[in-house]
Amino acid sequence: MNAARIAGIILIVAGLAGFFTGGFSFTKNTTAAKIGPIELSVQEKESVNIPKWLSLGAVALGAIVLVAGFRKS
Image 1: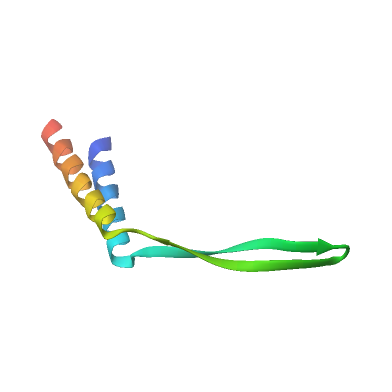
Image 2: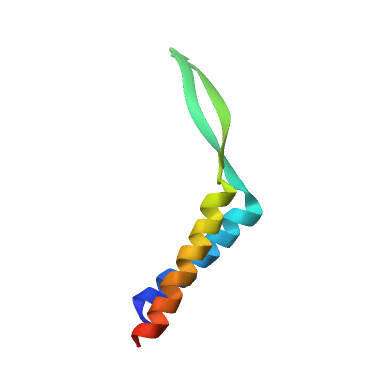
């Protein structure tokens, strides 16, 4: 397998994952205040949404790269 085929497969898988999940979320810990031995920390939940058009574009680009990888060899 050459690099173009691997990149095409990775783009297709990432695009499908983004399309079906719609995004991901993570928790970020921040220190709000620190006064002597007392520390106040806050957990914030952040979410990142992946647009459907971006996911479909990644799948399409992956398919193009995959086909180009097969035509080269």
